Length: 417
Image (cartoon, rainbow, N blue to C red; front, side, top):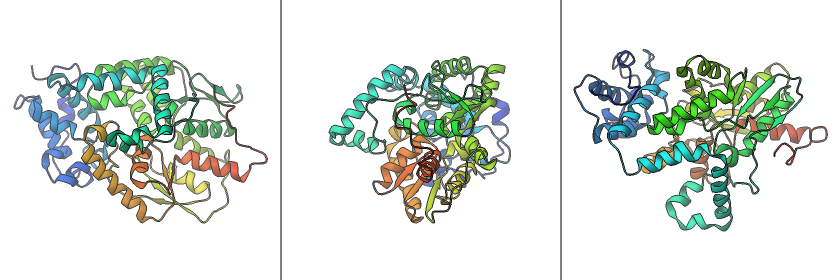
């Protein structure tokens, strides 16, 4: 038997690839290396060879599949609609199962176990917050480099989990809080909640939800990703609208359709927060603000553009905030963050991060909007101080508060437990 995992890449999906090569120009790793095995069609060829018994899952197969950023730009370019994201996740699961590494156990603990325990995340986040303030991380070059992209973690740590906001008679939206985002990017949750309530929604953040499972799935830890997904499906059951304010989480929630009717209902109900807020602006529930004359560079996260096929909502929000919205890197490549990729492949991740930063700098914008936490961290690493980087809903919320502070003063802490 070639495959050992319960859900190997499907032959019918692999057969869709006609090796036309339209994926090559949009693939970051192929563009960097020019190596066919570092391209989507090259990886699909290797995966298909294993499925046909012509090759085995070995260290070379592991190298080929793990080098992929899983940005899914190839899916957008593919005329045959090859479901590359699902295929590469299955292939990574095979590689992890058949070519175990010493690091696999620690990856699984971090990406499949720690992320599912809010109390442990908060404890670790508190440690990071204290080391940020003491400057300890700067003594450790590798960790310090990664931590440079992290926002200052607030102390005490806020949490949206278990909270409810807005008029109980209004339409209900469930906020997907994620795992580390609830501690590390709580300001995004705050902005999302304030805007949703002002747009006429009642917002809830059910306490039984957990990590979406994207990090575990991308790393090949299929069992952990499935366990997390099923837990979320149970927690989110019955929700008619689910808002995700981290693009990577939102893209993964949409993959829950593979878990039957209940999973399909969650996937169907899920929307990125930028879609919901942009629609509220369009129908007049949220206002358009006077022009500022300033420009904002909008970075298009891969998991928003390619995973969820949301392209215009962030621009609509920035323009409604009174800014000139310009593409930070129109048709550009992945920023190189890609979840844990920047840790597992630091050189490639850094090369892509610097290239993305150079394109942002070329826009001469002093404000950058990014709808994905991982992308924001990468931009912070390579843009450094002097550039404001925030989620589109934060930028809009801040301008809204500034323009209407008398009637709508900023809430300094009342919405948090």
